[in-house]
Structure formats: structure tokens, C-alpha cells
Amino acid sequence: MTRPPINKTDAHRAKIGSSDMPEVHNLEFGTVQSFQLIYFTGGLLGRQTGNSWTIGPMLRDGRVVHLGPVPDGQVPELAKQLGVSMLGTSQITLDDPNLPFHIWTPIIGRPSGRFAPADRWGLISNNARAAHDEAYANLARYVEVSLRAADIRLRDAADHYHRQLFAALHRGQSVDLRFKNISEQDLHAAFHSLLAELGAARDYLSSITAREVDGADTSVDSLARLVAWTNKQANKSARQHPDVALLLEGMDEGANDRWMHELTQYRNAFLHREPLGARSGDNWLIIAASDTQHGPVHMLRFNLPRHAETDPLIDALDKFVHLYSRMQGLAGALADRARYPDTPVTFVAASPRATDGDMAG
Image (cartoon, rainbow, N blue to C red; front, side):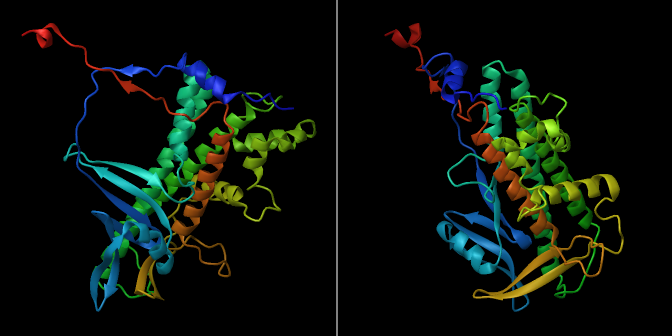
């Protein structure tokens, strides 16, 4: 059995308390300096120059150059032509030039025109807390924090790919020749953290889902426990619940894409059995090159450890981008079905009140 659906419109009205928008006093306006970067797979990076982008690094006649300027609207098509995927943008704001901050906006796994999943679960948390549902609000907040941390770690991994590619091309690194360096450890750490955060988001989403199914108690606080609970004969019908089905879809042996199973396997392997980078003979970096209509494109590859020589070579960023993208999709689908809406609070700036001094004269 499932619990009756909650009317999200009514829940949101209860949150506000009335149809009136709250007024905000002493609102200050200002300007800040910022610029944007766009990250791609393979180590390519775009830098914003007005309404266009320069994208690189590229190697031409022994020199490291960048393509561009590329108009903003042509970047997605250019990415396809180069054989790379757009990951996300990082807006770097220089409000404090000594402490710039980055705002990551995912592109991959995010439907056009929607808030990012991390933002959506933050709004759901706010609305749940305003409705005095503290348990749900806390879990939604945990999902938000985990997804946002995964965003940052994916950005870090993509940034390290770019730095390695840029340095390799500048020093004339040969194509398809394996190499290592100390900075490679930054990649290990970024991927470890990315998998840990994706695993945390998975478990918090599972805990939220369990609360929508009759018979499941608060002890079902992870995907593993949700699977174990639904495997019991008395609870098998819970697998038909739409939220449970969404979570388990990527675990089933007959699924076309067992991405959730892969995420669990990688996460458990690296966090419990063998950290990434522990094998000195594995995890070599390689520069690969391919011909495109824009000339040769060089990309960094960081192949995951293989258990047998016959196993296919899998680039770590490509694989973990796929798992990240699927988690973004799952988090978004479950946000659509959440107990509370992801509607942001709307407010108006209060009109300044006239003072005696304003009235004088």
C-alpha cells in the first residue's frame, strides 16, 4: 500500500500562510565582477569572452591554441563535432578578489529550463520545514548537500583533466604514451569524493522514498536496506510503488543500463576494498587524438583499473559522468514526486518609508 498523495498546491499555501508575498526591507543592490567557464569531457575548457567562447587547448603546428571565438548558441553543436560532452558551467564571482567563489550549473543530466536537482531539493526542504515536517525537511536538505558536493567534485575532476591536458600538450607529450605525475593524486581524490557523494544522495533518496511506502519504518535508511526490505515476501508489492521502481530500475539484472548497480560497485570498491590509485601499475594518464572537421583534437584519458587483460578500457571521467548524469535524472524524477513542491519563495522589496527629514522643507 502507498500513502495518499499530498496536494502540493495546498502544502505550498500552508507554507506561506497566505497568498500575499512577504516584504523584504533594507534590500541592498550592487554589482560584482564575474566570468564563466564551461567544462567538457576529455579535458577541454571554454572561457567566456563577451557573448562568445574560446575552447581548448588544441595543438596546431606544435603550438597550443584555442578555437574561437565561438558564438554562445553554437557551442553545443561544436561539442558534438569535437566528440566531447558538455558537463556544466562554473561562474566565478570576484566579489572578494582574494576569495573568489564558483557557482556550478550542471548541463548534463539536467532538463532545459529547470532548476538543477540540488537546487530543487533545497527548495523542497524549505517548503517542508515551513510546513513543520522537520524529518522530511532534514532528509531533503541532506539530498541537496550531497548532490551539490557531487557537482563540485565533478567540476574538480573536469578541471584536473584540463590542467593535465594543458600541461601535457605544452611539454610535447606523445600521443598514446602512458605517463604519471604527482598531480594525478588530485584526480584520485576528486573521483573518490564524487562516488561517495553520489552514494550518499542515493541513500538519502532511498530513505525519503521509504517514508512514502506503508510498512517501511525509519530503519530503511539506505538503498541496501530498501532492497532488503522489498525482497521480503510480505513487502514485494512495494516494488510497484513508482518511487521505489525509479530507485530499483538501475539495479535490476535485466535492466539495459544497470547504472545504479555500477555506482554501488565502484563506490564500495574504492571506499571499502581498494582506493583508486592504490595499484602502482594502474591508472596511467594517456593523451589520445582524433581527427575532426576542425582539425585534430587531443583529449586526456585516465583509464580505470582492469581486473583482467580482456576487460575493456574505460575512461574514469566518461564513466563517472554517466553515473552522475543518471543520478541527476533520478533526483529530478523523485523531486517531481516529492511530498512538497520545489517552488521558490517569492518576495517583494518594500517601498522605503518617508522620514520627517524627507518631508521637511
